[in-house]
Length: 338
Ligand code: NAD
Ligand code: LMR
Image 1: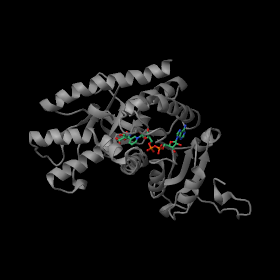
Image 2: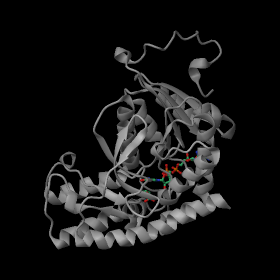
Image 3: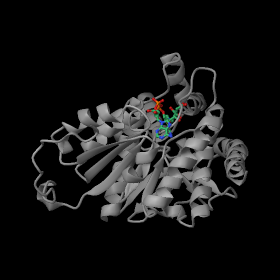
Image 4: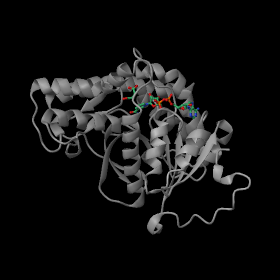
């Protein structure tokens, strides 16, 4: 049974309204692809988040086990599992935040774009569910290739008449997490004290770390800039190769998604001044989608922040990023126009 607390013979549960400590309002969060490499640790981390009152775990396989397992954690979120396409609507109804890590991961030698044929359809189906059942939810989209899946999701929502660009957020937090880690290593400081803006998109040269805007202000040699930019742009491939066919980043990605999801929930609760990088509909460049810092609020990405001053190296990088990004965006839009 997916929800053991509803087994026959189990006593009726008492009202759950007061489960969250201090009566703080909690949010309803769904994870689609919850039984996967990212989905499982992300389910664990969201079950630990005190802002989550209800956690729905959806996948096409293995959700009963993951749900039973995670539901035994003595944190306040109520966990429910959903298995297969016929339960997608039940998983999504009433949700405030939907996190989507469903889809195939890379193997060595593949680009993220090589995942397009499989993952485009998965993202379309899941977003059609969001449009039907929780059109006001904020969506955190993780499935690759993010540069194309976010435009696909936007087209699905436009078609359904539910599109609000503020509520559709492509998750690029792992690029920021990696950038903070690698820059901190070079500087010899604690990564928690470092903040690196990473703009553009989420694949190869479209991942553009702005080392001239690192906080606290830091200067780097040319050699360090080349090393750091290359390592940040290829962080995903570094993990894919190390895993040697067993998948791509899952643990660091779950950490990054939980960090970004928590930022969204805090902003939805009304906390001010929450700035994160995300791949969103944007007018910062001539492209319809671009990752920059955004200010999160109750309605999602309330404000898209400008790129800020770039140095010559970053300006060259920006042109390369825009070229590839444009192709990926057009590919996503064309998929939906077919
Ligand atoms: P995985 O194969 O371990 O898990 C994917 C899960 O999705 C599986 O449990 C599978 O059953 C499920 N799934 C497949 N079709 C589905 C459907 N129609 N509905 C619901 N669930 C479905 O893969 P993973 O390592 O967890 O990676 C998932 C995706 O995230 C990949 O596309 C990967 O490239 C991407 N990713 C993105 C980032 C990022 O920074 N945005 C980082 C890492 C991975
Ligand atoms: C990552 O950056 O780790 C993910 O996009 C997964 C991948 O394929 O590299």
